[in-house]
Length: 247
Ligand SMILES: NC(=O)c1ccc[n+]([C@@H]2O[C@H](COP(=O)([O-])OP(=O)(O)OC[C@H]3O[C@@H](n4cnc5c(N)ncnc54)[C@H](OP(=O)(O)O)[C@@H]3O)[C@@H](O)[C@H]2O)c1
Image 1 (cartoon, rainbow, N blue to C red):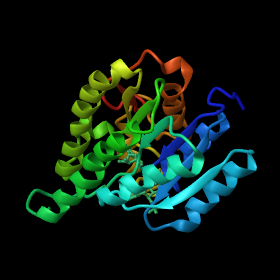
Image 2: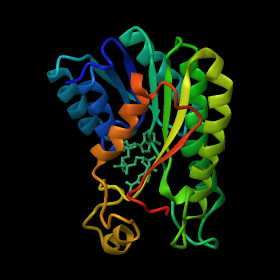
Image 3: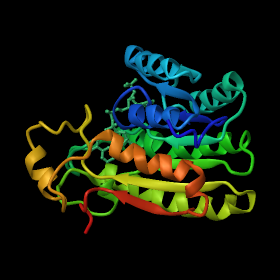
C-alpha cells in the first residue's frame, strides 16, 4: 500500500468487473475510499466492495444505469454523501455495440452515445459540484479512437473519439479550479467483453507492438498515476495504454 490517496474518495462507474474493478481496487490500494456503480451484476460489485473493505478502506456499490442521466447524477451524489466527499471520478462503464453500417440501428446509436459520452459528461458535471482543488476526472476511452483496423466499430469508435474532445475542453475549463481531466485509451484488455482467449484474440493482440493483451491492472496503473499527486500537472491529455496498438 502506498497511501498516495489517503483521505481521498473515488467513484468508479462500472467498477464491478474488468478494468473498472481493477481501477477500484488499485485506488483503494493507494489509500482511497471507493464507491462504484454497477448495472446488472450486483454480486461482482459486492465482491469488489468486500475486497476493498478487507484492505481497511470504506467502499460502497450503487446500482446506476449509465444510460440514464438521472441515475448517473444520483450515483455521484450518493457516493459523495455516503463517503463524505468526492475527489476522483473515473468514467469507466462503456457500451460495446458492434455491427455493420447496415445492421446498426438508431437505438444502438442512442445507447452508445448515452453510455459512452453523455454519462461521462453528466457525471463530470455532477462530480465537480463536490470536488475541491486537486480533484481528478479520468475517463476510459479506447484504442479504437486512435486506430480502427476492423469493420463494425462505427458507433464505438465514434463515441470514444468524442471523449478526446470532451477531455480537452473540460481540462481547459476546470484547470482554473485545479481539477485535472484526462483520458486513458486502453488497448485490448483481458475482460469479459474482450477475453484474451476469445476467437479473434490472436489477431487483435497481434496488432499491438507488444504482441499481447493487457491485464486490467496495467490500465489501472495509468489511472492511479493520473489520480495521484504525481499526475497533478497532466490535464486534457489522452494517454494510450495500448501496448503500441496505435503506432
Ligand atoms: N476490454 C478491452 O479490450 C477494452 C479496450 C478499450 C477500451 N475499453 C473500455 O474499458 C471500459 C471497461 O471495459 P471492460 O472491458 O472492463 O468491460 P467489462 O469487463 O465488460 O465490464 C463492464 C463494466 O461496466 C459496467 N456497465 C456496462 N454497462 C453499464 C451501464 N449501462 N451502466 C452502468 N454500468 C455499466 C458493467 O456493470 P455490470 O457488471 O453490472 O454489468 C461492468 O462493471 C469500457 O469503457 C470499454 O469501452 C475496454
